Image (cartoon, rainbow, N blue to C red; front, side):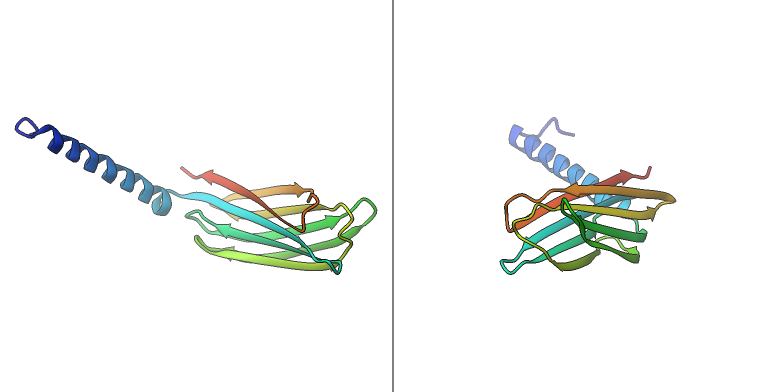
Length: 152
């Protein structure tokens, strides 16, 4: 088949085949292969008046539903707990997100620890992961984690 073709033509055909193969594999990964991929993004913001905001966003980048999703956020300093809140969502579909926003009055000169626990079920498996963050001396910080598993 390729005996009568020029070198440029052979290279173009090989490149086209490689591009098609990459597109097929990427499409299978994005849309077909059952996988869990939950991105947990935590944003910490301090205001100059002492108001502190903690936002947690869960984004389902996988191909299966995350069900019975529970987010527990604990914000504390060395002496006491400022915030201890939970939120539950029945389901986060693929390419969907859920945001959880909290506000409290604190002190921007204190050191805080933020503990985010995410529990959910998917593909007959239970996932539970806790992330601990210690914001530095910045007014805004973003922390990002991913919980992933391929179900083959």
